[in-house]
Image (tube, rainbow, N blue to C red; front, side, top):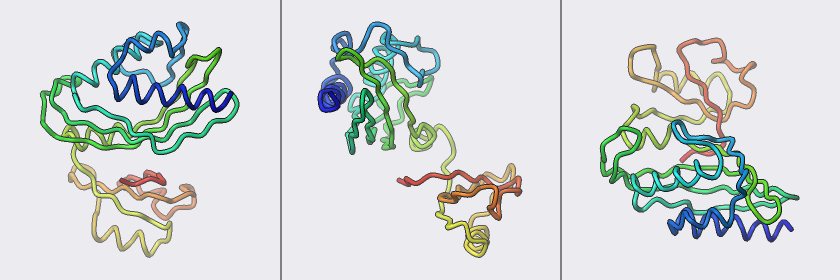
Length: 195
């Protein structure tokens, strides 16, 4: 069964998302599909999924999700993908910028009776909006959690409220023990994947 579900998720990516065949969702997705990563302003379920991919294809005609890894366990499949596109149509009130974006996404899909029944996902939406110019760019630094490293990056990229300079310190697995944990004017976001 896991291999069958892996084949189904590849069809979702290859034929629906990358191929633009939104009508195929009726065959691959259950009528009572549950979406846990709902997009603002769109209905949930299978209909919301159809509208989302149609919207993305309109805003980004070359919209694509390249599958980097697929792992199947029981009735669930996890896919790590790279999402990309060129902004050539209106998107969430933004006029076309002609800019390209490339961000990471993780999808977890539960299958039942040969169809996608439930979806959870995490997408680097902030990175996407940053690359499109909708939000200010941020400087990214890797921190090993050591105070001396944090002080060196602090000298390079201070972040003060209202200054327009922000710092993302990544990779600190113990925020409560971190040197910057109690500094209100530091932005500490931990991630293991930097673009």
